[in-house]
Each structure stands twice: as C-alpha cells, then as structure tokens.
Image (cartoon, rainbow, N blue to C red; front, side, top):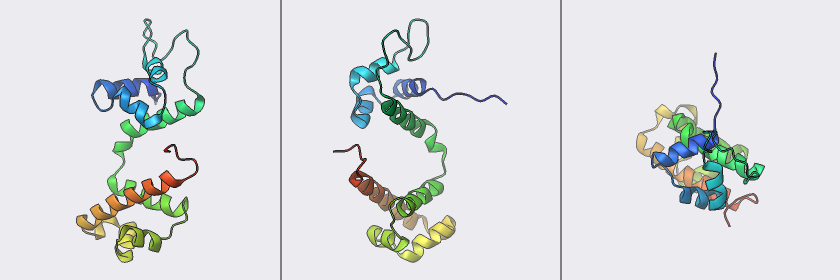
Length: 153
C-alpha cells in the first residue's frame, strides 16, 4: 500500500492555480505576510516545492495553520454534510460546554428537531436541517471569535 504525503505548498499552489483562492485571500485569512506566503509558495528552479537557500520564512505555528487550512480546503469537502454538522454541534457541546438545550435556544431550532438530527439526520426535513446548519455554523463562528486564542481581533 502506497501513501501519498500531503504537501501544503503544492496544495495551496493548486488551489491558487484553479482560482479557488488567491495569495491575497491567504494573507487576509492567516495574517501571514504576503512576502512570507510568496516565499513559501514558490518553486525553486530545481523543481523542489517550497525549498530555497533562504532561511525559513514561516514559524512552526504559521506552517501548522497553513497546513490545516490547505487540508480543509482540499480534503475537507469530502466529509458528508450531515457528519460535518454533527461535528459542529459536538464541538459546541464538548469544547464549549453548551447543552443541546442551549444550542436549540441560541439557534431557534426546536430541541426535538436537534435531537432527532443527532439520532438520525434523515428524520428531519431538509428545510429544518438547512436552518440548523446555517445557524449552528453562525454560532460556532461567534463562539470561536470570542475564545482567547482567536486569531481575529
């Protein structure tokens, strides 16, 4: 069995070439300087991605954030939407100590519908699932923006 290594620079270059994101958007999202991003994304004349004689331009934290973003932008969309929505709700409960009742009240979704979704996503109508998805997404971003380690200021 052969495994393929995930190369962050290659994946981000591919996303840029396909028009899915720009260097400017990467800068705006990550806060990493445009020069550092450009250096990270450049391919040397030998064809070795991201390698140059210049010292490393990204900190280990920046590299980890870029790697996570690249994985989410390329591989993350293969996750089923119901699984993704369940993960959002589970994150709100496990990481941020919100109860199902809290989430239902904050998203203005009936507690029964939320619990039906968690038991079996096929048991609620797509309109309710859509509302839950949009509102839970908004809620997790609101919570994440307020956390002490948030990168937003």
